Figure 1 (cartoon, one colour):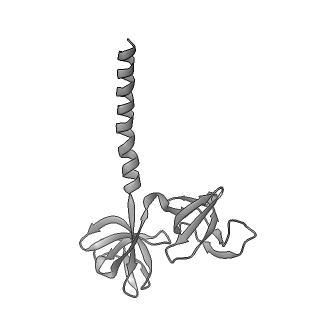
Figure 2 (figure 1 turned 45 degrees about the horizontal axis):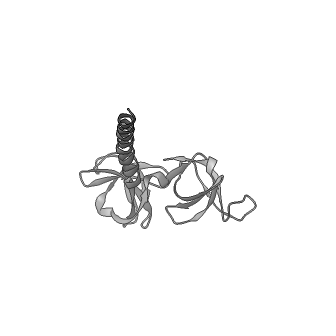
Figure 3 (figure 1 turned 90 degrees about the vertical axis):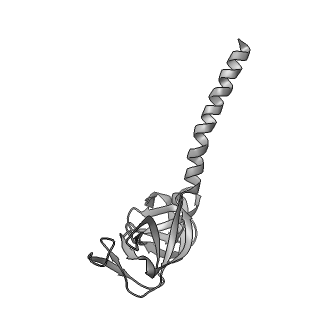
Length: 162
């Protein structure tokens, strides 16, 4: 009886381990590519060809998130301001990688401070829906970097998953 119970317990533990590992492994490997715009005035369009309307233009050197979709030589991207659309792949170079769990966006306007304190020097202000990368969380504060490279601390309550 005791042997049968131990065998059943071992089977249950093995099943739990089997289901737990892939979820953690796939979440850990979920990456977002960061691309750098290589031409001045590169246009973000509503669809994957030059026939679609232009949503906005971005400056050379701007970093954008690759949203994981290519169509007709156009990459589906997301700017740091939260604008999504298609950009000609020839205007983009690989820049870096962030993990999907690190990408957040501002719920509204939020102040970024040099240190994790509201009495610290202000570094910049995030606009509503601006995307950032969270590198560290300390209590109610998150250390972030914008795609333009500005870093600092922002209240965690002002961010949400992108």
